Length: 144
Ligand SMILES: [Zn+2]
Image 1 (tube, rainbow, N blue to C red):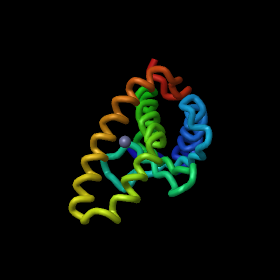
Image 2: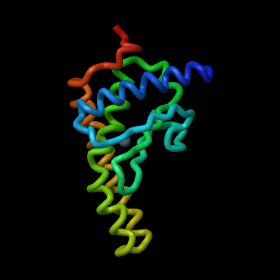
Image 3: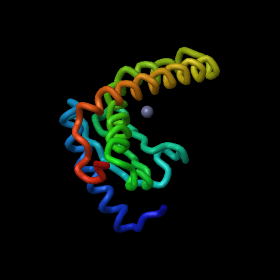
Image 4: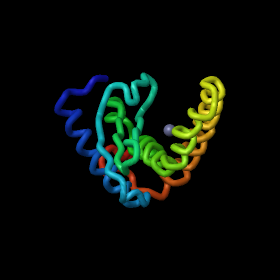
């Protein structure tokens, strides 16, 4: 299941060029997105990918799991579209993420943030199914 360092490098380049293409198709041109291929995106052993925007800048790091190198085109498209959609709500999420901790107790904040985060995750995932169909597949790894 493991991939060599060279395969990892080639996969990183392919994902980066695909992300570049989707970035413009998804109206995210103001964002600079660095792509990293890693064993555990977001330090989560189950995650297929994770995106981390830099505070106050239109810059983000997209981590993609090494196993995704073996995923089919549609699967990979969904995963990447999902992560890029998260960039759309960065500013509104920051209203809660940065303002609420000053106003609420830790337990109230944790409860509210987790409820918000979970409903956001479901929304982003549903939207990514709808949006992904209209976007190009990666040019490698197409199943057909
Ligand atoms: Zn997500």
